[in-house]
Length: 205
Image (cartoon, rainbow, N blue to C red):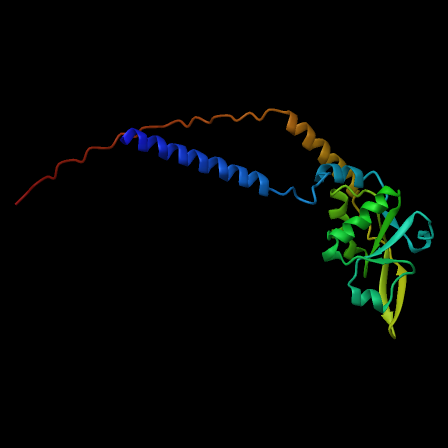
C-alpha cells in the first residue's frame, strides 16, 4: 500500500514538472530587438567609414532626416521634410517599422538633434541592432525669437589618432585571445627560526 502511494506521488510530481516546463516554453517570448553587431564589430566599422554629414550635403534623394528631439522642440522648428522620432521612443514598434522600411528601400537615415552629442546614443544603439544605414548630421540647433537657427558645427578632433589606437587595441585583443595564459606557481621558501631557551632564574631568597 505504501509503495502504491509512493508511486502515485512520483507520478503526480512528474506530471506537474512537465506541465511547468510546457507552460514556460509556451509563454516564452522572443525579444523584439536583438544585437546583430557586438562592440568589436561596431568599432571596426566605425573606424573604416565616415558617418558624419554636414548641412550642405543633405540635399540627397537617398537621405531621410530624422529629428530625435522631443515633439515640443520639433514643433517649434525643424529641418524641412524631417521626421520626428524622439530618442527615448526610438525602439517603439512604429519607429522600428520606419527604420526597417528605410533599410529595405536603401535609404540613409540622417540623425540630428540639438547638437551631435544628442545623437550619439541613438546612433550607437541602432547601429548595433543592425541598422547600418545611418549617419549623423553635424549641426547645432538654437532659437532666436522662436525661429529655428541651424548651423554647421565641427566635430572636435583629438590630437591623438583615436582610430589608430582603437585598431591597435582590437589587434592586441585578438592576439591575446589566441594565446594561452600561463600562471606560474610561486613557491614560498619557509625559513624556520629556532626559539632561544630562556635561562633559568638565578638566585633566590
